[in-house]
Length: 121
Length: 108
Image 1 (cartoon, chains in turn green, blue):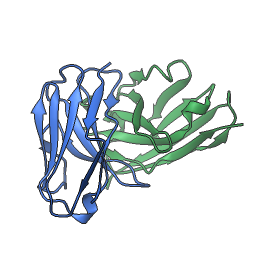
Image 2 (image 1 turned 180 degrees about the horizontal axis):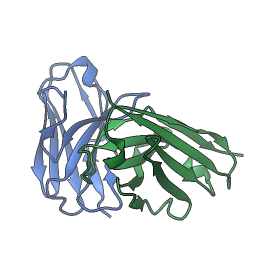
Image 3 (image 1 turned 135 degrees about the vertical axis):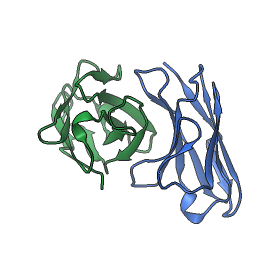
Image 4 (image 1 turned 90 degrees about the horizontal axis):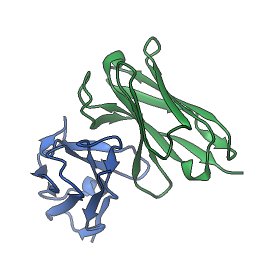
């Protein structure tokens, strides 16, 4: 059974940092492209970042230069390092797995339950 | 950036009725469009990928169609558990991957 479990969310002041984790199981993590998608309170879905199985990274313009996606294939874990946080980064952050293992066909067949990040003073 | 527009914003229907949701892209996305369902407090759930392919475990009452810039998600007969928000997402031209703003299907 595929499982994605996010952690690391919380309350942080503007300008602060936070690192999110997503523990994966039930599939071949090392060759699966992985993603972060966020949802501000009461709003729609916004793609944040993706990382291929080989480690190539992609970012939304809104987070480029501030967020870093990475993965530890030995721990089956995806990360999102978030620096210089702004109020508009407040959202639930979901990790999501690409639908076809080993591909970059970017639809998302499994999602975690999300972790809430609140940026406020 | 490919902008996706969904209509209507809200669709008020009764159980058993047919739901037709629209997603329009600002430029052609070929057939590289997916649909998701999201219920309050839950993560999105993949329904359809590449315009018309049902994801694993998705009931046959959900179907997708379209290509280029115009796409449709049809729920042939609404079940009580189908009342939710539905999002489309394109993967044709990225980054960025983009989602539509959503259509809420609620009980009439």
